[in-house]
Length: 315
Image (cartoon, rainbow, N blue to C red):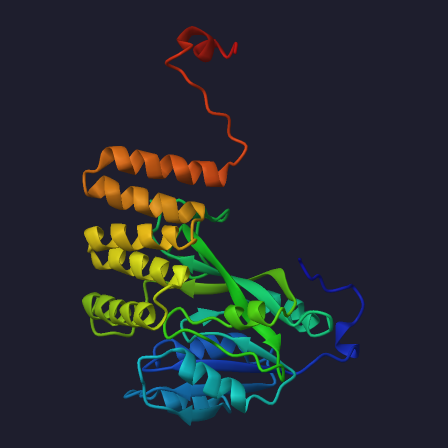
């Protein structure tokens, strides 16, 4: 669903108020960029700081943000929910310090507050980076991202905008989402085309290896807490791939598929793992399964039984 602003004066209409809810730790390098992108959009800024040692809190307060401190406890949902509980707006908008929303999207987001029959909205994050080998990589028509660094991105879609006062909460210590709650409570969700811009190469850990260690520990914790949760297994498998443990990743992704998380990307990821482990036959089989998921009406041709006709297309 694409919400377009009518030609008449939209400022004359009453819109719901918006609370920006964020969490942060040591985000001084990026925080102002994020808050500059939303300061004319939101009615209040709520930030939960999980232990910054830099001047992130001072920067946040310079934007009149209400800042709450909660020491990090290996759980992303905890500070997210603390922020939601403090929100006074009609709607809650979720962002991170390394993201921005374009000024051209402000009107579209404002108009969502007039759609009373919908509880929550999906927004798509454009994760910019050098991901050309990923199956879902998208090349930008302009050739560059808004910062002029990368030529494309990988999209990820999740709920980032929702009504306040419905008890909506984040769940999961890692890759935390409100979508679990929304689906369980059968609340109405609508998809928008409003983009959030994110630069995946930016990190606030001391090194890339420390970042990998940090997320691997959280992914393992989530699986311990949700042992039969297929998406938790998938997230662990992806994290193990990034970490470089292809053997563990192949088993974890296969387990996620067994538990029911079997979208095309799962089969493609498993295929890549198996290929790097020199298990070519299993890799090809997994890739074919992914293609079948991606193109369910794909016709299979038995070339060995009818080589001439298969080559000519005369079946």
